[in-house]
Amino acid sequence: MSAAIGVAESPEGALAYAIPFPPEATPPVRPQALLEAWAAARAAAGAGRYGPARRFLFLRGGGEEPLALDLADPDARCWAEAVDAASPLDRAQGLALCLRLLALIDLLGRASWTRGLFVLDREGAEFHPALLAAAATAPLDATARFDAALLRERLTASLPARTTRP
Amino acid sequence: MTRLAPAVLLLALAACAARPPADPAEAALLAACRAEADRVMAARERAQLMRADEREAQVGALEGGSVRRGTDALGERFERDRMVADCIAGNRRAPRGN
Image (cartoon, each protein chain N blue to C red):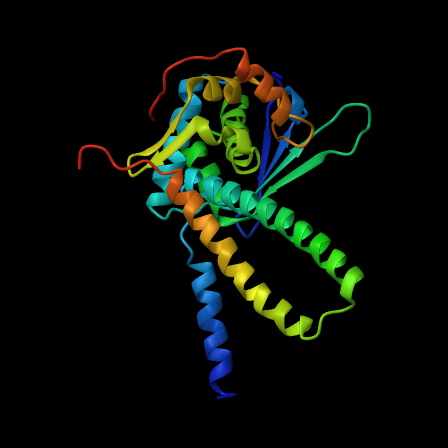
């Protein structure tokens, strides 16, 4: 985990990150930091800020092929850029924040049971603290996503709690 | 009209490129609501197919089926869009202090 994350930039401005650990070894982050990353991504989207295309190459031991995760769509590029500005992605913590933020957004979009655990209004999103804590610390899978069933198990063990606003 | 087509296409492409990035919560909610609407529509379609199979087994193929299916497709698309919009509205809380 202590090995450095290498970054290379293409002539077109795209960034490639050589990450010396697999997605499953993504370190935990503080829930508050994840909340701040969410708020930063929201602010960047609201300001219409775009970011460069990014490719994360997760190096695996044992001669396995690296896993490539491409951030190509404008939303993911914007959100990653916002995290990078606050916590550089060439550091494990910044990268972990970015990956966990993207995994959380992905989870909210595909796991219907999360619906009661966050609400939206003009002031932003409000999360149940248990959801936030789980997203900040639960392991990512080999494709840098959350295992929805595992995360749900973690959540059910930690209720009830009050809500938190970015 | 044919001379205008490339310009219209360019405008459309420019509009795509200019789409502002989405708020993460809005993006997640839209994906969730679309998935939910798709699940409901798929379940409904399965039930309708089963009923249609039963009817056809009893009285044979119904005349005018293709026209009705076309109308149904439009209606289903409208219904799905309405479900997505209702879902998004239902998961938004009224702004506070206004």
